[in-house]
Length: 555
Ligand code: ADP
Ligand code: MG
Image 1: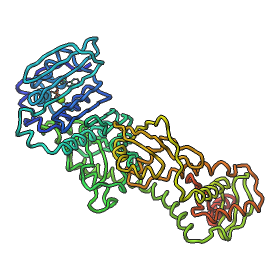
Image 2: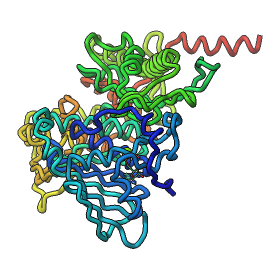
Image 3: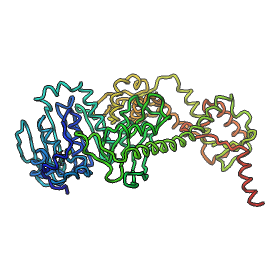
Image 4: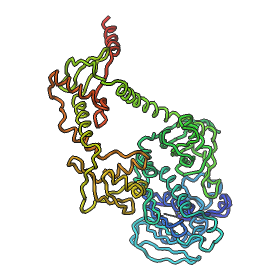
């Protein structure tokens, strides 16, 4: 149940950081999203037309307002988030809003329509145009939709000061991204002139990163959940840090992609973003900045949200201690993640190098037996090699198939009716630009708007029809700046698997030697087409070390 909506007394109003509340369309979006979050929304839909002065609509599924409260809410200094006589305690609020002036300020410079319901059968529609208020019944599920049109219509100077529509929408989009990353449990969507540009599923930080960036950035990111004690002005207190850090290999040219929230409120805090960047330290290439989102939760009483009219800056009591804890947390989260990656990469590297270094890597191999009719045991100087016969055979088949289909145009089949595939907004905008590349890969596509592409033909190599959904992975790869996989590859890998030797098939020594010889001819003999290793090496030193331990036990 929301608190009662009241008018703040003069003494409290005097404590509020004064200044212009609505300076550009992005500020309207911030204030409306603040309100939706404060109303406990789990889903927030934002729609913007043009540069935002045409129309901004924010719909939420929060607790809504009664008719009486809705009429009061558009007046100045009315709020449900503070007691009337809060006075100095203004700074103790835990809600994003607390001044009771945003709706009034928006009504001052635009036409505003509020449709809201607190769950009662009859909802309320409230319209404020040229200071005239009209109220009527409306049908709506619990929640609130606020539509702001003709922003700055009677303020030519304000309108003049706005940038081009793309730039104003860019600011809005950036604000929404900041909220989506600061509040990963809430579902956000943003659309511009009817086309969806951001959606998040409200299912955690990695998911929010997918919505704001893409799957590739998100996959390589490290989640931070870190609680630590810091020295504060009055002893010690606990600092909570939660966020997600993109891999240092994914960078941007500006620091705007480092997003800081304090107690769930997105803020522009140079000190804290500097601390995050310093945490990446030398992992970043020169002149590059990371993609990161961190929600900083300082010890109770350590934050003053009432220092800036747009609430985009906050006062931090124990700033030095917090900044250094942030830097440490980021640095240690990345070094753990990095160590894991390095381990994985090292195996890959040896594999690759072995493959190019030696003409036939298995020339000196001797088959000495088999284990469970699945693993071939081979001897190579001081090493024992264990070969997965199924994986090895898949690799051989795969490379043969590849040679067979190479250089021929990809056969395609027509889908009638065409399939609709929804793709990430970033990917959709690329579909058009890369239609030729997609056609080469066997996809015939058409942009359908709203993150949907229509697929009218798909690749069908070797009589196997690709899934229309494969276009999504292809667009993701283009979005990430990679060369998309030839759709043949996945199918070839699948085909290669079927006639391959299964576990449990017994091979004669001669057959085993043949398999190794064929494998040795492969371009990439060390992994099956699905990327699993074909060979595992155990050097004699490892065996010796193992037995030494055993032997000391029996000494
Ligand atoms: P503040 O957020 O500082 O209280 P606002 O002018 O933004 O001031 O909003 C005034 C009041 O209107 C809020 O305190 C809240 O009670 C109500 N309100 C505004 N937007 C919503 C919404 N989306 N859902 C429910 N209540 C809302
Ligand atoms: Mg507000």
